[in-house]
Image (tube, rainbow, N blue to C red; front, side, top):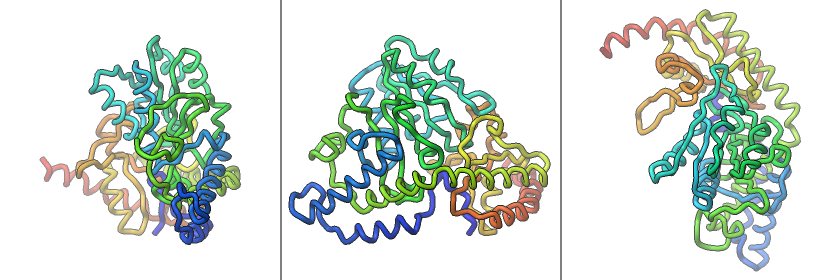
Length: 383
């Protein structure tokens, strides 16, 4: 299998797995005071420190969660509950943010969604125009999960805070791929997830700037300084700490090599296949992501054909409850619903190799041609 769906989840790094194997021998509850419990507590706190170093934060500002979705919910609902008022987001946010603010809207909260430009960039001026007096929270992702666009968080966050609102960023796709510095960025909240950086599923974190109030997400015990009750998942947290450490150590070299492979893939596609274009190619992007529009080739059909050839990619469509719908993030860049159907996302990691990219480039012309030929016939039968 040639795995090019790393924005969905990354393979577990062997070093992370070794750390998790060691942690699996620690049986205690991290809240227990006996020796075995304190072993578990050390695992948790050492991992928290690793995550904090990756983000440029203090360990006490890092709250461990079950992943990016929970971290986003913790920030959105926790901030909104303590400070009612307008909520501003980008129109290209991850569903975990979009649906959280939609729930707030159903309860009467005013929500404003600012679309990115057709280039894929997000204009900070347009976001700040929406931050009127009475705005409680602004949530703008650091990097888009569909086409990889990097948004100007540092340009937005400081001004949002000067206007009296709180600022949250979903950095799940960016952390571990480009540098993060919560102090320089000036954010109040930042979400990350382990399984996007070669760590395990089931672990994530929310950075909460010291001194910022947040209504607790999960009531119960006193874990995570009463912000998120529940027994800590020591095994996943250990893996998260190892993944964060490796990401920090390898950040510069990985980003350079992955970007080289992505550019090789894009250049090869554009040279070999007419009617193709890269979404967001002329705006800042994370180094691993390429969303390609193949005119006349429905993305889901191309995904299936590539899967049969042993290549894993993703479409520009979000699958929910068994139905396919165009990605709101792609629509927000100005693509039509029809165009969004033709987008396939390739997302790379440090585990991909040049020969894999070349194999995909060899497979794509025949696959795209076959899907394009079949598409009119399928459309006719559907009518």
